[in-house]
Image (cartoon, rainbow, N blue to C red; front, side):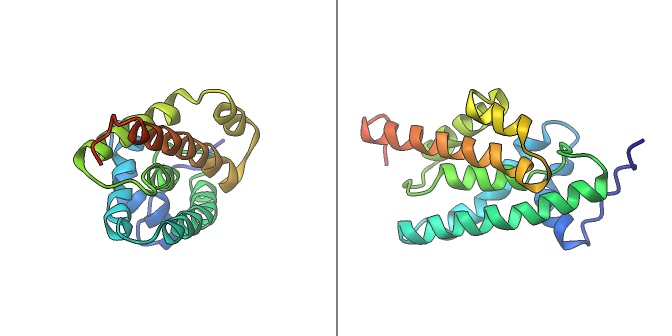
Length: 161
């Protein structure tokens, strides 16, 4: 029997694990949770590429703890309200991009596509890994796939940035 979902945003790991509370949206919590990456994207958009990558690693490693501990609290491996993995994935998607509403929209759609559809290796990671690593790994990989697509679209001239 699972423990009841006990959300407590006063606990730091839940505050972050639940995407500052955006993961508590009654419909599409992963989609709403993805928006929690925007402050990080806007804050670091002028940072050098290497620093954006370091920041992505930091928020991803932090997510191992926050998501794993929140999942333990809730008694559910990857509760839909746990969205820090989406924060990290969307942040990764936008690394090195010139931020505009067009690039954010394309990156958002691509990331949500890869996160929801989970093609190939993303699905394998989602099924085989557990705990904080299992929660984070598939979204980090979805973010990397999306990053590659955003950068390819830019190189081909399809994105105006």
